[in-house]
Image 1 (cartoon, rainbow, N blue to C red):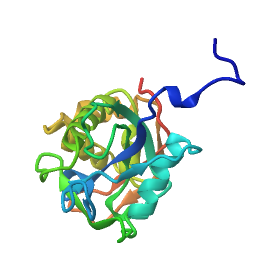
Image 2: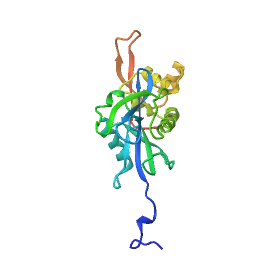
Image 3: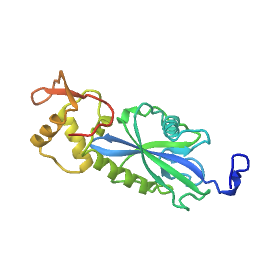
Image 4: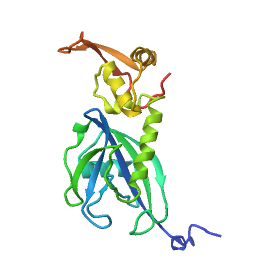
Length: 226
């Protein structure tokens, strides 16, 4: 029987653990994901999700936030655990289990790239990805399906919006993610009846049509829609 005194930590193999962050944003009307070009083996020169190894004393959420900040200079963004990927041969270095996260933020949030770990950082449309390292194509596919599902029952799109926005901007994001047009009248009715939006009494001026009223979310955290 194991006890605190005789427990042998070496009797079980200890796989490495990483975090990978799927960073979504919208650029020129397309849902895009931030990728980094790897500067070292394995998959040197391939595009991959930002991420890295988790230290023995590090919390997973903090590791994910640290990695995306260190590699891309992004912080204070929506970040949520997505899924755990553990296929035994997914990484040629050793047995590596990765905990994937997905993040949402405006594209302007990227500040810098840590050049000793990556060669370049670039956005790619989710429907036109380059050849990817590891199993990152699968991670992106799972993350995209999660995002499409979650916008239907939560206010998660706040992560892609500025603090104040028009209903048209919100609808454009939904249409971009769903890949289809939505009925404007029904969409507005649904959003306004959700109880999550607050009118700011400010308007967007200088448009071809009449000025649009701006709204904000009552809470910039995930809340289930009515």
